[in-house]
Image (cartoon, rainbow over all chains, first blue to last red; front, side):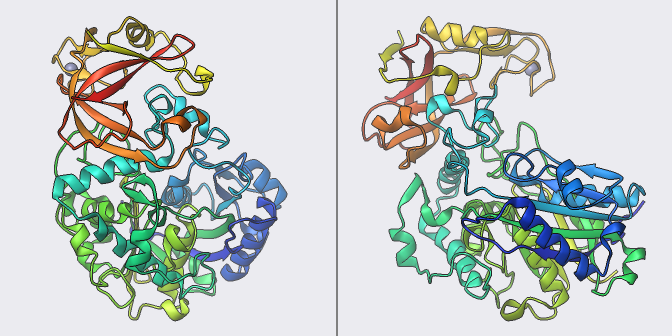
Length: 393
Length: 143
Ligand SMILES: [Zn+2]
């Protein structure tokens, strides 16, 4: 059964992002949902599926979201209250649609983080998870002092630099590129100009990661409506098709913010060299990394772009830090990445800003950031989940 | 003989350490006796960490606790310039390492001492930190 292009995004909406919102998540959600319904040309009563992200205490859970937003759904779901599930949310919607569990699925991410403590501190709502036997959701072990998602990411990055003999200053190309993109996006929260000097003067948070390597947490809501492509012709906008998908990986060799083979936590040590044949997302879409016009990633921290480029075969092991230099990942370059500014500069809404940007880019609605003649856009993360989007069948 | 370092700071261990369970109790109680012990698979002989009911290498369910030598090398390290937890405030900036033990398994631990400047590959030795409540945790010192 080939599901290539069987499901499409037909409507999108956003509340806008804010570093500190005074609105409640459900109010932000409603603004995004109304916008997505209008964009899709649908009535609220037509929505019969809901996949909700983040949930309590930062946002509404799927049950309250459905009742407070006036949605009568026959398929409801919600992943664990962490950020990594944007593609998983869309994939659940796609599976529900292809199995006939629903005809129009609303994917909703709505939450406010600014009223919770810093990630890694006891004030954070998820702190207790770091005391799980075997470690926290980002390999935290608080009794060693290893806390915060940036902790094990710093260990991965240090090892990566050592393994391939990389000058840490090369990392700067990533936050600088994403900031240039953000300055073309009025909705991005970080608008100040950045240069290498400012990057190198930025203080270390967890060395080798600097402040400017870390994403900017924001409050906001994004809504997307998905349907089977055979129904999408009733919708006014060009359907953005899911041409290939690949799930989030987990296991002894996976670390959420690292690269397979780096040996963080209990992972084995090897050079990650993916073969196109091993990657469902490319196989299903019938394309390879060279066909992708824009890449969007979960950049909680800047090294994640290096790791994604190697994991998905855009370049060979150890080459990514050189590969990203010279404007290659910027608008106008060979592979523009995170063209809305990404988590580092647009704001960290768990990948939903990036997926919204993919929809806008493919529809030709990206304004000053528009990539010309774009055919294929890819979402991909360090733990392997991915979606290739396009307009063509 | 493994060095034992006493740390004095106000601490509620429940806020920093996993709860003791039937699975992990031998690991934590060995530390209070000055030993680091991990699970070694009866099938393939490999040591594993974290504590798990099955060997990730061969799938075997049979295993025994094995005392580690306490020798290892720095596999990677990260220096914390931001304090997230009050219990580590007095140690700032402190270094956490991923240590590859001589037995072939990696474990996280803080590198003790002020202004430590580790190199990847540098030898380290196990030290045990004794906390005010009596619980003990594994840490490492540069050799
Ligand atoms: Zn075994």
